[in-house]
Image (tube, rainbow, N blue to C red; front, side, top):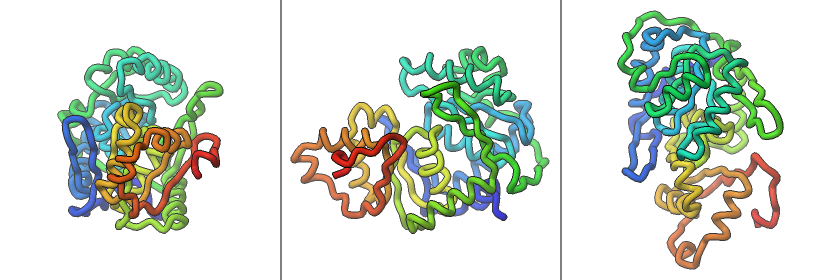
Length: 290
C-alpha cells in the first residue's frame, strides 16, 4: 500500500505545480522542484535534533513555507502538527495560545515558524523553535527509515471552538484512502486546476488543496487568506485568470463574493471552467448557494 511519503518521493512533473500568490507577485514551484527541495530538506531534520516519529508543530504564516515544511516532514517520517500561522499581527496572541494548548498533548521536539516568531513559539511550546531556512542550513544525514502505511503521517487538531483542541493521529493509510475517495467521487485528475485561499492547517485547505493536488500532481494556486478577507472578489478574479475547475469554501465565503460582486465583475469573470464548487465546514445556507 502506498504511503504519503512515497507520494512525495515520486513527485516529478515539470509542467504542473503549486503557485503562491502574494502582493510581491507569484512564485511557482513545479512538482519536480518540490520533489528536489523536499529530498534535500528531509535529510536535514537530524541536524536540528529531530528524528523519524518525532512531532514538530508547524506555525507558519507563509503558505509556500508551510507546504514545503509539511511535505518535507512527511518525506522524512517526521510527524507535522499544523496550527494556524498568523498572517496579521493581531492574530499572534491567538496562535501562541494554540501552540500552548497543543504542545503538552503532542509533545513536540520543536516548533517550525517564521523568523519573527521563534522566541514566542519557543516560549509557548517550551521547546526550541526553528525556521525553514534554519532547517535548510542544518547538516544533512544520509540515513533513511522505512515508513509503513500504519505509521502516523500527521496529527490534526480540532479547531477548539467548543472546547480544548483534540488531536487525531492520521496514518498514511488513512490519508491515502481519504485522498483516493475524494478523487474518485469528484472525478479529479491532473488536468484539474484549483484555486484556494483556505488556511493550510485546516482539513479543507490541507487535504483538499495541498495533499490532493500533490497526489494527482495537479496545478493549484494559493492565495493568502488575509487577501481574500480583505477583498473576497479576488477569489473569482483568480478563478477566471487560471481557468480553474475546482474551488472550495465555507458558506460565508460564497456569501461575501455574491454580496460584493458588481456588474463589472460579472462582465469580467469567466467561470465556465469551474466544475466542482465545494461548500462545508459550517452550516450550509441554501439561499446563499442559490
